[in-house]
Length: 592
Image: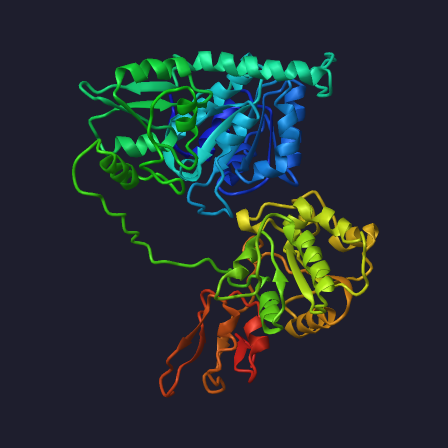
C-alpha cells in the first residue's frame, strides 16, 4: 500500500474521500482551513466554503438527509454560530453518515477564546472521536461515518490545533463508493416538532447508552498495561503521544472515543489500579464523567485547566502527584525569534488605521486581519469580540452615549468576509429605532478575500476576479435594505481617504464607507517599489509610524542622524508612505 506524509487535515480529507463521502462544507477558520481546501481537490465529491458555519452545517445536513455521507468542518467558535440547527439535527435519525469535524485551539494560538467542544457534544448527545495522529485522523473519519449510520446519529470528530497541522505517515487506501440512499417521506423523522421530538429525546438517550456499550471493547480504545504499575493514566488524543515520549512505568488507557465512555470498563479498571489519573486538555470532561459514576480519579488537581498539555506539563504534573520521582522539567525554550503579527507589506488596511489613529477615533473592531489593529504598534481599534459583533456593539455604544449626553462619534470596522458572515443582519438592525443624532461611521474593508485564513473567497470576490462565482456589490446591497449614506473610497488615495473618514465622523447619523483595494497577498499585487532620498528625509518617522514591514530607520554614510529606509525586496509599491511623508523624501523607483 502507498504511504504518504500528511497533516491531520489532509488525512481527514483523504479519509472522507476513501469512505465514499459526497457532500462537505465549511467556513474557513484556523486550524481547520486546509481540510476543505484538500477536499476540493477530489473530483468525485462536492465541497464548498459556505458564507458562515450555520449555512455550512445546513448544506451538510441536506446531504445527509438525502442519504449521502456528509461532513461539515469548522473551528471551535464556529459551533457557536451553528448551534441552532445543530441542536435540533442531533434529534434526527440520520440517513447518510454525518460528521461534524471541529478544530479546538488549546492555548488560543489563533482564537479569541478557548472552548472544549466535548461539552457541546455531550449537550447535543453526539459521540466524539478524538484522533491524535494523522493516521488516526484518517481512520477515525471513516469509522465515524460508519458509526453515524449504524447508530443513526451525527458524530463529532475532534482535533486540536497541533493535531490538525502536525504531520505523520498515513497509509492510503482506495475509495469505497457509498451510493446515497435518497430521500423519502418518513413521518416525523425529519420534522422536529412535538409530538415527534418527545420520541426523539428517548431515542437520543438510548443511542448514547448503546454507544457506551460499543465503547467497552472498541478497538480505538486501547489499554497499555505495565507490569507492577499501580497507576492508570487516561490520556486521549495527542496527550497520549506526549505522554509516551516520557517512557514512564505507568499503565495507559487511551480512549479514541472520548464520549460516551464505557463506565462498565472504567469500573473494571478502577478495581485493578490504586489510582486513576486523567490527563486532558481544557475541561475535566473525562474526570467529571468518572466522578459522577462514583469512580475515584484525579486530574485537574495536578494539571492546568487551560493551554496545551505538552510533555513537560505532563511530567511535572505526575511529579507533583507523586507518581514519579525526579526534578521538574523546565519549559522548553523557543529558538525562534519572537515576531508579533502585523499587516503584510502593501496591506490595504494600513492607511485606514493610520487615519483612524491620527483622528483619535473610538473604533469598535471585529474579527479578521484588521483585528491586528488592536496591537500597540498600530493601536487603531479598541475591541474584538466575535464575527460581526462590531455592528450591534456600535449601535449599543451610540445609544449609551446619547443617554449619557456624549456626542462624540463612534467608528466601526468590519471586513467584507465578516460582513457577509454575520454583519448583514446587524446593518439591517441599524435601521430600527434610528435617531438622526446618533453618530456612527461604519468602515467596510472590502479586500475581496477572507484574508485572515488564507484568502478564501467570499460573496463579493467575484467582482475582483474571474474564478469566484458570487458577485454581490456591498454598496448596492446596503442601499437596497435602506441605507442612504454609502460611499466607496480608494484607501491608497490617502488624502481622499482622510477627508472622507474625518468628514463623516463629524456628521450625525449613520454613514457607511467601503474601502476598495484587494488583498495584496492573495492577488500578488506588486508595483514599482519606493525608496528614501536621505538628502531630503528629515527623520521624522511619519512613514515608520504606518507600521509597514519594509520601512525602518537606518544610518546613512555622511549623515549624522538616522533616516528612514525602505527594503526594496519587501516593498510592493502601495505608495502610502510616500503620501504621508511631509517633505516628499519618498519616491517611486524610476520616477524623478
